[in-house]
Image (cartoon, rainbow, N blue to C red; front, side, top):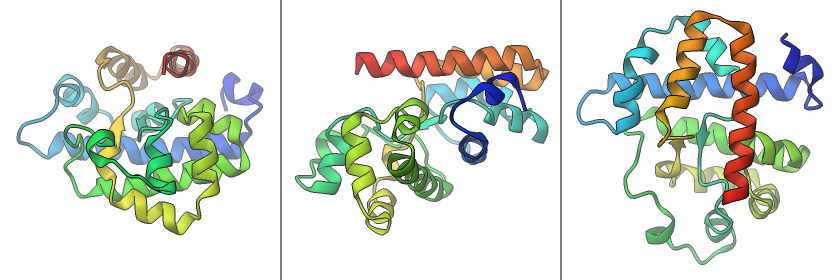
Length: 203
């Protein structure tokens, strides 16, 4: 266990769950890299790095302190509209799906199950690690899990890599994971938290 984990108020179980979820996210990204055809810019930028990671390196990359995908968690109205009513998919939906592989729906279910659990049990962690707005903590935590999963399955197009437009962050993470530099990895974890907090302040 690294220094950041030992000092964290979040607890080992929360961090372990985040790591397991990020492993699924990285596997999804890898599957997208292997899908062929036209790919969005981030995949083109990181494909070589990601496809060359071995299992140990993937595990290290998954140890990021924050969730490596987003599903509109900072948007104060997206999930509120979907859950409470007044859905406006033309306004909320991404212009095109990032993930085209079938596994995206399963990962979306896992992401929303995790979001629901943290919103109910550790709302501060939901905001810190997933980037949920205060509104989305309330509406996601207040929804039944079954209903949330049904909504999530029909909105897998909302699932996108975090920092999609900042490929350098991804390249730094994947290169550092491949090199196995524990000090650099810990600095990247802290950087990820700072970036997510900055994004939340701007949102």
